[in-house]
Length: 339
Image (tube, rainbow, N blue to C red; front, side, top):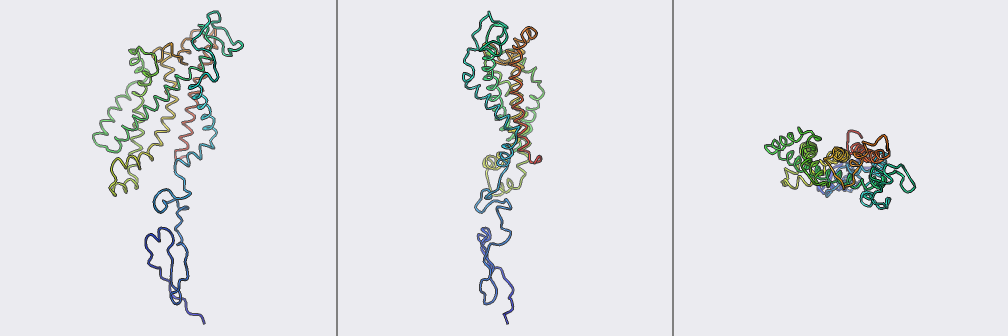
């Protein structure tokens, strides 16, 4: 008759054995080990918990990995990204698709329509509209990217510090942001840029950064306030992590997603703002080639030569739409509520 089955007792395993899932149970007759296998429940990969020794669990995916996985399968993102890549390419190397001179004109061909070698026709001074449309992408893309980068950097730093430290620093920055929020952007551009004699892109970039950082600052502040209340930040603080380490290692990577979404959408808005200011005569000025300048000069001849207005306006519309669509796709990918 077989021996009765003795009660099982868990072996006194060390915490390291349990963490790695190699703990065993011993028991049975004569104390011989009857079972040696990983304990059930220690499925680090399935649970998505940090693997032993720190770092992400093997096979787990974080927010950025999931976002990229979704973006690659989003046709809106793919199309807008390809359009933006093309625009950035011609902004850096316009001679790839336009070998003409955007400043050279022939008054004998003023306001003429499309002709062989000149598919978009000519403007008031006999300059090739196609060449000027291609070269106009450089100014608009430069203003949009530089202004967005400056506003995002300044707003993220100030808003992040205000949300992290709070107190009088938060109150001071919030009141300063309220002052800039109260300035209408077009009125501010007319006042600020009317006293600037330079027609380059940098005064326009500086003005947009000056009035654009408060929006991103509020987004960054709210995101940091939310993240700093999470358990992993409280645990890092309890373990003695410095403020700099918590900001750079724990808070900033988890709070930057809303800032990226807002900045991507704002980039298209800033390009449209530059064209509006140039159209009103206070933004970029000749001899700078800009879509806004060409639209302004062609607006008085829309009945006689509509092609002068059509092509720069179409290029501006496609550019702004591409960046806004890209921002919407990024927002959908980074927002957990939309999953």
